[in-house]
Structure formats: C-alpha cells, structure tokens
Length: 391
Image 1 (cartoon, one colour):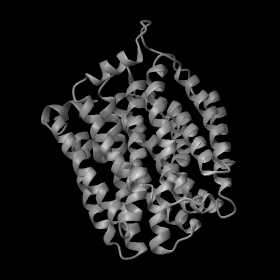
Image 2 (cartoon, one colour):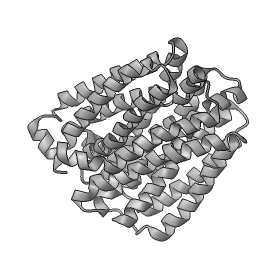
Image 3 (spheres, helix red, strand yellow):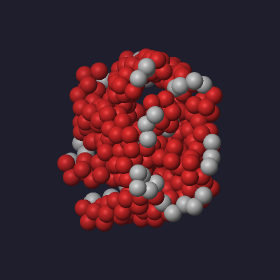
Image 4 (tube, one colour):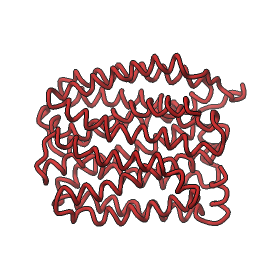
C-alpha cells in the first residue's frame, strides 16, 4: 500500500502543479499577451475544457485497457504539451497547448482513482485516496509557489520544469508500477451504452450534478486568488506564490489527516459538515481587511477542501464496481467542466464587483445549491449514509 500511495502521490503532484500553475501566473501572462482580466480566465478554462471533453472518451476506453500502459501514454503526451506551453508566443497558442495538456491529464488522472479500489483493501481506500489527494495539495503548497518564484526569471520556466518532472515520472511509473490489465468482460459495448448504464445507477445524476455545481463555484474563486492578491494587496508574482504556501499547507493537512474525521462522522456526515463550513467561510472572506485575515480564511477553506475531496471521489466510486475508469473520468470531466465555467465567470465577477465580493459570494451560493442537491438525492438519509460509509 505504501508504494502505491507514494507513486500516486507523485503522479497527482505533477498533474496538480500543472493544473494550478496558471493561477499565480495570470497577471504576468495578461501583460505578456495584452489581454483583459476576463479574457485571462480562459487560460484556466482551456486546460479544464480539454480535460472535460476528452475524459468522457478516455474513461470508458481505459476500462478495457491496461491502466499502467494508459498512464504512461498519457504522461508522455502531458510532458510534450506542457513543454509547448512554455514556448507559446500568443494567447491563442497558449490556449491550444493548455487544451492539449488538459486532454493529456484526462488520460492519466482517472487511472489513479479507478485503480485504488482494485489495488488496496476496502478499509484503506479513503486513506490512499487522501494521500493521492495530498499530491494535489502539496502541488499548491510547494509546486505553485516554486512556479511563482521561477516566473520571476521568466514565465516560461515553470512550464519547462513541470514537463521535466512529468518525464521523470513516466520513467518511474514504467519501472515501479505493477501491470493492471483490464478486468472487463470481452463483450464490447459502445461508449454511449456504458454511460447509459452508469447514469441509470441510483443517485448517479444527482451526485454528479452536485459535484459539478460545487466545482463551478470552487474554481470561480480559486482561479483568481492570485489576481485578487495582486489587485488589493499589491503582491507581485513571487509574493503571490509565497502567499499560496499557507493555502497549500492547509490542503495538505486536510488530505493527510482527514480520513480520521471521516471514520468518525461517516462519509455523508463529513460531506455535509464540510459544505456548511465552506459556505460560512466564503461569506466572510470578502470582509478580509488585510492579507493576514484573507490568508487565515483561505487556510480554513483549503484545509476543509483537502479533507473533503477524497470523500467526493469515494462517494462517486460507490456508484459502480465494474466501470471505475468511466466513473473516475466522468467525475473529473464534471470537475473540469465546472472549472471551465467557473474560470470564465470568475473573471467577469472579479472585474465587475469590488474586491472579492462577486467571486466569493457566487461560490457560497453554488455551495448551498450543491448541498441541497445532495440532500435531495437521499445521501444524508440513514440508508444511503450506511451504504456509502460501508464502501
């Protein structure tokens, strides 16, 4: 279990660094390409759009393939596309290469979430998912700030560094990860049929809708933290990277130690408590009068986020045992679909409202809606709660 946890931590660290890298670089890229704040949001959305669209195809296909080979292929494509981002001469070429990076990540990430339930004991699933999630968290705490510091020399440098790290991980996965051949039956099914069967599962549509709404609100705020810190607290790109350390630390703490709280509250209870706490924090956030207050609130937000993400994924994985690649890809496509819309709306909100009021309260409202959708699905009922907690 330790080897699997470490490998998946590193894979998600590399993927996560590239996912979140663009946030602290937005001010520098906006100046380089001479674009507006609202237009800059599409550099976040391009990656998410590529991921969201291709994951819908990659998930069902990967269920019939060796997951190790699929992951290696995706990492090679990810290495190339990320390196090209560092060479992008214009906004539209950056948009294209970010789109391709998102497509590549859509091949890699679902294999992580899909293979965990097959490789570890049931009682260890949440713990290993938490450690994989910690890779995303540490990418914010270490990778994103380092990207900000490297960008002091040139905004091109962080992309080249991530591409190099992805290449190293490709080699490591090839050597260390065990083969994971398909366990699907030989019977061939169309992609539409696979999705039809999955979406007919009890509560599937509502779980995915609630997750989509949550991620739309989440990224409408997260994608513009760097822009807000630059505008209201006069931070340059390196200082934004430093400020993100506290946020990444909170996310890491939540990812590493949240499984203990989940065992006490149960998965449905943990999800409900996390959403309620996040709603309160985002309502309070725009009233931060200084950087320290904003950092404290964001620390709480990111700690809860690190704790609740494995619960989201495990809840979605509970929908099926035979098409985990499909449900993982669909979950990630749902997340990045929300990221696409959240990134586009967030830029408009940031330029249209004072401070962070528009972004923060938009996020709080969507979290309320997400909570209500989960409630209507029956997730928090005694029978549903017992079923999910047993997974």
